[in-house]
Image 1 (cartoon, rainbow, N blue to C red):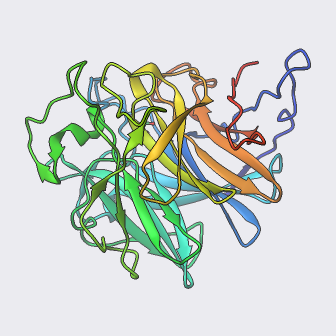
Image 2: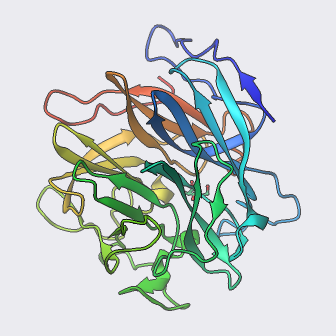
Length: 339
Ligand code: FUB
């Protein structure tokens, strides 16, 4: 199915304040947009939300019961958005049982790599990889998840030296609390208020982009005094939705705080961190989740994100884009999507 939607309302303004971005597509529900520029064209790798009526809403996010991925593409910001059809389906992932959550993609040596989380047949979240010669797929999944991978929300970053890193993790429904020291504990619990918060994970990828080149490590996120956040700092601590971008030689690690619905960022000097907390990228949006990507297109930077404008339901989201500004001191100007 090739469907297009024009973005005539993109530049609509609210009382002359910031532009309000409109859903990029409205014929399907989409979320967690990971955007990239490949060969001068913009490609968005979102989750494809569906109303799985047979699945009850639960605390673990069981109602986020997605079954496939579609890749969206456009020639320019504000241009026509094309849905390139099904890029990968649950039934074509040999190891996966359910819930195709937030994906990301990258390109290396003639191949596009799609990284995605799914629950395996034991209902444990793992991260899979699938490949294609085209940025829009169809993608072919590897028979097994990435060895040593776990939890959700993978994002891949390739540094200028050619090294690639996979960041991942999400607490609560994303099961990160079940992984201590890379060992699985089905009883792993959420942290108590005064305990140090869980941290996202990173591993360098091997040259084949399909395996980890090293043991998974924690990504340190510190406050301005060099201290880790506690669980009670839930307006700042990591929850899910990692993204890494580079600006002026610095590495920006951004993420969602989940139950307090912020998108935050922290800055570091190398891909492993530590990253020092700097503030908010995006204030809470309509709907429970907040998940994004930050990408440069030509000379400008953009935030791709989602809200629930079209449905009013947390699990039926729509992706959007808005401009993002780095201030002269390297901080990011906080975005309020509704002002
Ligand atoms: O889309 C399913 C999950 O919701 C994602 O993996 C999380 O980041 C949250 O957006």
